[in-house]
Image 1 (cartoon, rainbow, N blue to C red):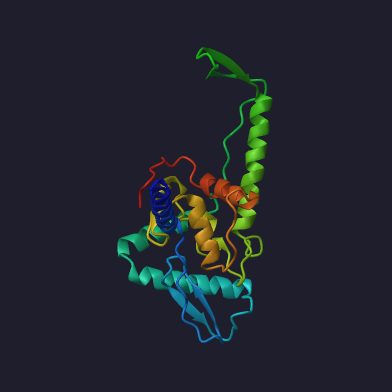
Image 2 (cartoon, rainbow, N blue to C red):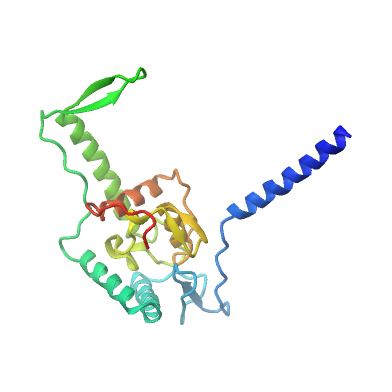
Length: 241
């Protein structure tokens, strides 16, 4: 009887485990209608797509062609969304393309200055830590290096591993309309609550037809740093759409 009971519990556990795994499975990207003769590029909404006449599926777009395709996809998307949403998108994109829009990093402290930060020891008592101007300059330098690398990746189709020549910046100039401060939030495309890195990977796999980045990939870290630097000063409001 004990053996039978154990077997039943094991079977029930296996079913539960499989069900839980099924819920965690990433949604598959919807197939894009194609005749196999011309390239089809799909927007990251998982619905909008356009056919590139005269370009085979295995070919690579020139930067000019890729930007033109991105523009066409965005035009198609804006034609079907709420006008207020399209206006807000265009307003932010225009602001991001202004000469004043540059990757930003926190300013360092003046040389020789100190900042006292209270840290709790294992026993619960507070212990003061002194940070010098040199400390802040090192941290600032390293962060700026990360942001600069992310900027390069965001604007390069080759660095994100794009198979068709589409780069992130072609739809999101200077990371416009990425809103990193709103994550985590529910994403319709993923059908679950997503982190910023989840949407970065979705966009790499969709329009760019590249391979997803591992969460610990230096490129992912740099992309997140760059995107977040472009929203410096914007209050975090996770869950907002």
